[in-house]
Image (cartoon, rainbow, N blue to C red; front, side):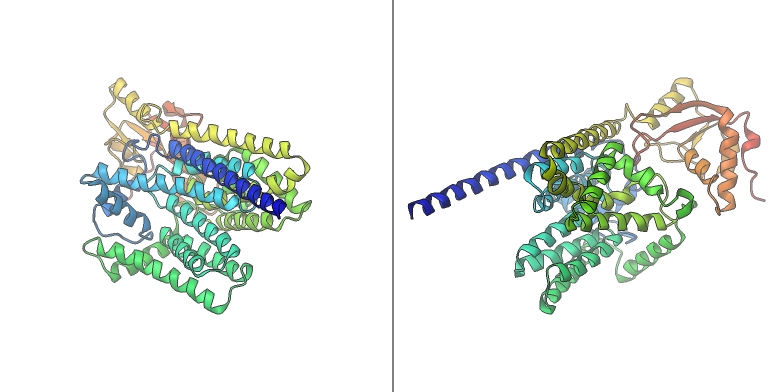
Length: 496
């Protein structure tokens, strides 16, 4: 009896100590994530070209519903709480929502991972996630991607909770999480549908339990769309339907370039988006650990999360509409891949050598954090390439110029490259886009025409501005300034 009581007391003490260590880990993780997410959050307005429209929506202009309204609803609420009354106030409210969403997503990522991994590896890989360029950079933009990541992580956390206990509270929580992801971004509805099917099979849910989840999901979606409509003027159900239609049309037509699957051997997004989002060493460690866990250890949890990552990635690769340079497309891939890697290091590599598993996690964390901090630092006006180009123009006394992409400062922008005859200089951020497009097959004739123009401009470059940690998610893109005075023949002729 005395021995039994002693064992119980030791167990309670151990449980309490573990709870304290986990709380400390969450606090440190949230601090790391917040320090990156909120650093340079006041970077110049206009660098991210979608933000002006989001600011207008947050200020009360009716939403166009080309994207779901969760981000805007939250930004309006934060703006109301903070007393925002200007563009800058609503801008910071929206960016603050994105930053907070990424901090919360990092904590949820850790809580999901520690269900499958030991505390040390769970913490290390949660830090890899929080400090990665993918999360650290996209936490800064008044854009839907950060709340989508939060929605995905919330759904996964609700799923593991539901597996542990199928209570009414957990069923409602899971349904709420699925609805939240669907209102963050329309592709989130696809992720929610898959998680719903997984939950039915994985958690062995009955019909009534599935109904509770589905009902909560639908009510969450209706509530968020309803709040959005009630907090703006001049919109209604027709506005919502029109917005959905425009987004479907955009999904069908895409952009002026088409990224065909076989052009990049099915690895375009892996090469240009996933590797920069996590760094080469982190991707190599993650893929190696996942492969080892699946082949040698047959770990089903690693396989499940890896399947989620590679399914997202494969669908991106299949779509010709997702262009190189838009890093945000791979954010859900980052969530699933790093979860798989963390479990693999803990459950498979850790069984062979715990120091090796921890060492791999540390290397991945350092590589990811170094890149994440460098990219965030380059959001500063003094480090940004666009402002460096504008300072160069000012120093040289050049006033007769045009730009082909928002620069973060007021600058004349032509509606068509054929209008360049009215300027002596072109400041270009889009030259890489068309030079790449010129090497792809089955593009619009206009793409090849512009590719030829920029190739012709190559001998007329007077300045180029770039950063070692740039060209990522609107961070320090490479900028070229072309002297057009002797390059008039390169410009496509005006339409008759």
